[in-house]
Amino acid sequence: MSENARIDIQGKSIEAPLLIGSENEVGIDIAKLRSSTGAITFDPGFVNTGSCQSAITFLDGEKGILRYRGYPIEQLAGESNFMEVSYLIINGELPTETQLTAFEKDITYHTMLHEDLKHIYNAFPKNAHPMAILSCIVNALSTFYPDVGTEDEEALRLAVSRLLGKITTIAAWAYQKSIGHPMVYPKNNLDYCENLLHMMFSVPAADYEVPDVFAKALNVLFILHADHEQNCSTSTVRLVGSSKANLFSSISAGIAALSGPLHGGANQAVLEMLQEIHADGGDVQKFVKKAKDKNSGFRLMGFGHRVYKNFDPRAQIIKSYCDEVLELVGVEDPLLDIAKQLEESALKDDYFVEKKLYPNVDFYSGIIYKALGFPVPMFTPLFAIGRLPGWISHWIEMNNGPAKIGRPRQIYTGPNERPFVPITKRG
Ligand code: ACO
Image (cartoon, protein in one colour):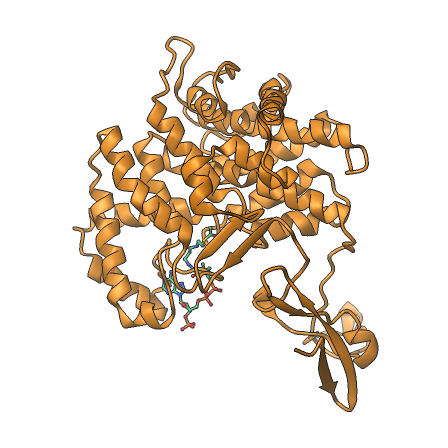
């Protein structure tokens, strides 16, 4: 194979080197395109654009492959836990027992929030969405803790531990605030997922006994969400961080990006859609038809993915896990039946087959979150907690790499130069 691609544009040409990834993906390095030819590439939505080289996650959307640092998602979900996977994603290798113990200890040590943060919580309206609170409080951490870069390893380790330790408390407090309950403090004898469940569902008058199966289910869901290479929120973290914005602010921006219904907010939107179908009498065909009608403005939430065009391996794991969890939890949820009918109908429908629209990770995750007792607005914050190690790892990789500040170009379509007209002479 040639190691260069030749690009001819309006009589000018360049030899653009090919970049070959470790799984043989091919990229064309067009760094010299504009300086040599005056042209830029145009790729709305970055459908064909690689923004960086990364050693964190590999995914093949055609084959349904997802691996963190080389380890298949199926093995990690089946045999590991969220803390171990977080260590792997951030540090590049699986930890030894000693390394994992130290990592967990560091994170646990930082689960409490500065008491002054409560003033900020108190200023939010009661019905504030917890994703907005999460993004805001994570950004506010940068006002409490010094700005760090990647040069000082110890300071960076501290910032990472703080973020991983505090995010569960921040999210749980957002929920407590919304229902008018006192904020529940973390209990550091509990593990990461148990602690989150405790802060969500305990009240000062009564401790919540965390069922093992609930903590295990959260572990699996968090592992499945832990990284997904250059998706919208991760690209946001990298782009914001490329200006040398601090870790907390960059992650706060990623949380904001995740909140949209076309990205992480889809898990809330899926459950609301299933509830709507149920309330409407459960006729899934009616909603499949509506989703195919471009004028309806309605999409089947939890269907389709920019990268997966065959199946989403995370959705397959969650689907198989869904029945098991619901049975263990002892919940019979009519929404699960509707979800299965919807999936079956869509997978047989020419529109969805031709456009390669399959259930994505968000299609079944909400049903599990609901069975564990989480209120619907907390679904996307749970996604954010799961995605945190990925965001952190990308922020560090970007800062340690040769990255320039992110600054796309544009094709200008506005007016050509024209003289200013004083207001008295207009119209
Ligand atoms: N329901 C109905 N039609 C759909 C759906 C859907 N869920 N998703 C895509 N389509 C159609 C589009 O209308 C479009 O049709 P057209 O080619 O005739 O115009 C075609 O399929 C391609 O869709 P795009 O939006 O161009 O695909 P893109 O790759 O840009 O978007 C996305 C992917 C945003 C996930 C999209 O499939 C979608 O909106 N899905 C629903 C929301 C969702 O579940 N988001 C979660 C994604 S996973 C995650 O972020 C964790």
